[in-house]
Length: 358
Image (cartoon, rainbow, N blue to C red; front, side, top):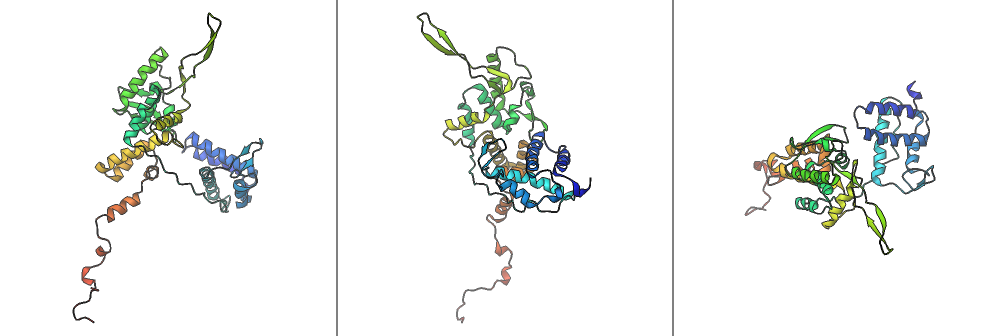
């Protein structure tokens, strides 16, 4: 097929097949969803016939996804947020660069679609004492173990919810985990703070199930809400009872973010937009701060980047709210001369008038 005859759907499949070897299945699934949605909107015309107007119409047109619109299923949708807008734009930008590299188009297809400015949101940064207090604010052993694991590992929520009992090796002090963004397998160390928390939870977990734990049991299982039953008393009256909730080890818990929010609320801290990522970011920042004074900025940054499984230190800097440029500026200027260091004092002309001067 000639380069001028390639259609978006064909180019899309080639694009995704190339990226499949570099990115996790979740990333490709999200990317494929966005791009196929775009193709279904513009129609499977040849790539060379795509124009910036087609892209702008998909974003901002009558039925564009960015504004209030009605889907083909007659469902009314509210305008998307700036982060969703920018996510879609980034996915298209990557695909369009691929099309340009292949010689299928020379158009600046995103010419009329500018990135939206994200609202400034102050990140919640619980202090170390607050993170530890969250453990005491949990309602059961599972929730306490979940928050303890988040604090001591920096795992993402979906990574922790995939951990099985057999992945935890307490004698070796390691936990096997699959990193969601890269599908990489990691054997993560168990800290001395986390070890007793996991041991305590596993004992309670086994006692509640009234059987030995199986390797395939989820470490953080779902829990039934209990069943209400009516009973007839001897006097003819009816009484309602509720059975105790039970763990469902074949399923992971489905409200992990609520567990974190309830612990935050118990401490009087904000809960809106907060979740496991709040603990992940706060724990990583405190770890960085404690290390940087001992081993230096760069070494601490590399260690925390490995802990968070980031591909680059720049990502970690942004995630933690750091700036290497500011760090270099501070080191260069604090307590040091500025312009005076650039000019020889022998060439400085005194401006103060001397006695008898004009």
